[in-house]
Image (cartoon, rainbow, N blue to C red; front, side, top):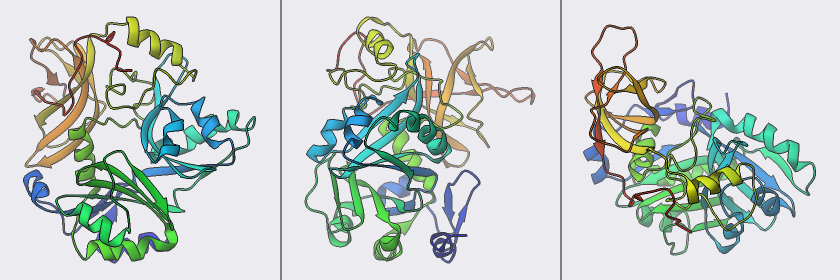
Length: 350
């Protein structure tokens, strides 16, 4: 067991098999989260480091995002697609210096993504390493987040979408009061203690709920290859560039963007259930499969919020299938996303 895990254990943390963390002191409800500032650890996510003079050039030819924008002090969401234009991984990118880019993805995908990209990295001046134990990942959100980052992270004034890096800390501003921090292992315990003394500790699934409410779907090993960027609204959240040039799957993604007319897209939904199986199908009243879950988070009292790819036509009632348990299917309710949705896929966002 690592020193970092021992450190968290001493604070009442427990880690699940998939890397998610829970604390003895935790949020009681989603409404409570809105009134407090929270800190969580994002060990369910992994980190890959791309080092060398060709790091940006290499990734530019592999992913949907325009990697060149990282040099301007921004962080970017993006995806790595297969030849069919389906997402094999999703991630966030930030540049620490001109010859290093860090890529954060779900920990279930770090090995497969590294193995895939390594096949092409040998042709560039870039080295690829798993940096998950070199950099720790924190999530910080709530009304006091910006003040805490300024006081303890020593960050300059940041706008949403900015990334700043120095002294073993990479700070990503996700929203007005929401930050993702990648902290070198040598500084992680000290920064955690400073932040934790001024806010509450929260289970990592509450951070996932923030992603769900932001409409940011994350691909895991379970969903790799299942969805296109358009189905998950990646063009709408700035995770796909249609001006950057070629990458694997680019022709399919571009054709769908300019000429395609998908009938299913991601929606935010609510439902009630004691437990939730992400592999369960979404069906209509006749039991016909109509969609699939992408990610979900409990909000308390057997209530859940989730992101799911379902038909754009909202006239039919939809349910979460329960398999052969004999239990009635769970009705789902559509909820709003925080960004405007296009009426057709052939409306270019740029």
